[in-house]
Length: 228
Image (cartoon, rainbow, N blue to C red; front, side, top):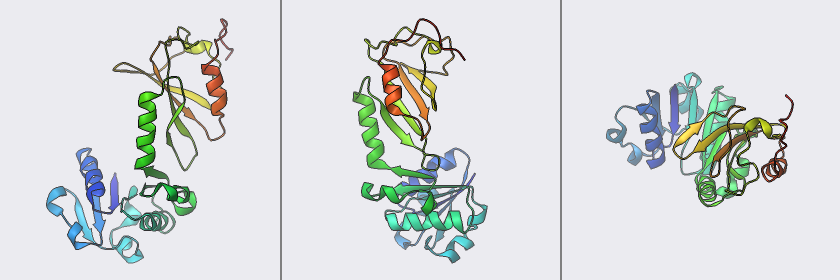
């Protein structure tokens, strides 16, 4: 992919290094001369310019980018960059950094944001995921579709431990996508048996009801598998 990263601070440079290690082309843009630490990410292209200006984005060839990452330390700038990238240059994918969680509500499709990344929210989810057993934990939300990734760890006394995947009447718009068992990741099949301490990862649409999933996880499944 060709990726433009607006904001060449520590966050932007870290993203750039990871993307470069995966074989992608990266252009780092920042309007502060002090941020031009080219030697730290020498494999990337660099540009001293303001990503909030149309002329700078045009010079960067933004219309040819597959992804634009707005990674500055200013939420207003990140929203403007995302909006221009999406509406003026038709970039297929925009990812924007949320600095202040109170501004997260603005990071939506109206501002051209496909994915909003809030470090405090991610850290909260990781803390809950580490300590919450038996409770649903929202790990991530896709802003464009509204779908969410939900995690739950099965306690030893869970009524669905010992049941097979096909025995459980999963709610509508809810898909069991992965089972994490110790150091293994399992693509679930109908015949797989759930075990204590399994981490279940679900994809839920915006219309799905988390309470319905919670009720299923807390109820003993029928001995007769649900009909297809």
